[in-house]
Image 1 (cartoon, rainbow, N blue to C red):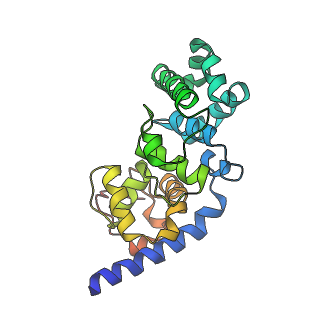
Image 2 (image 1 turned 135 degrees about the vertical axis):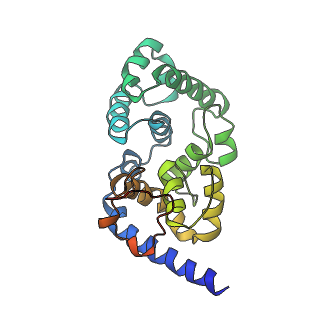
Length: 222
């Protein structure tokens, strides 16, 4: 029990440190959208972001939304034109099909509105648990923990969890993180994972939480 209390105290300290450093000036597209949330744009941006750099996702999302920012407009957009717009995000043919399919389901099954429940969101082909949680958190202000590669890697590296998939990480994090931190967890850890706790050779020398990190799996750091 004493060990568990000690770990929980460290988790709270780490969350407070990282929240103060990153949450107020996070640069990701999704976090900027939180100021004026548009559920459909957040969903589409998330789908475009898969295996793409944040800077690329932001640029391409803006270009796409100038032309088509509703399910109906996405469906009316010729496939070749859509593919050309989103080309730089990678896997553009597959993503174009997903964008078309998701838009059609939202239009036909949900009366042109992005659903507000996890069950309905993941019922849409192409929308997984992580994407659903991001929409719930960023568009609808729900208390969930969206877990992407950063949010999976960093807690494992620190030593909070020992999991193999983002889905497992989400479940474990919900057990150890206070609910008041859930909504901002993704924003903070994505930025931290991009700037400091990078996948290979993390910048441990300038890490604000190095005193609390177990550096699990870190063979070389900077």
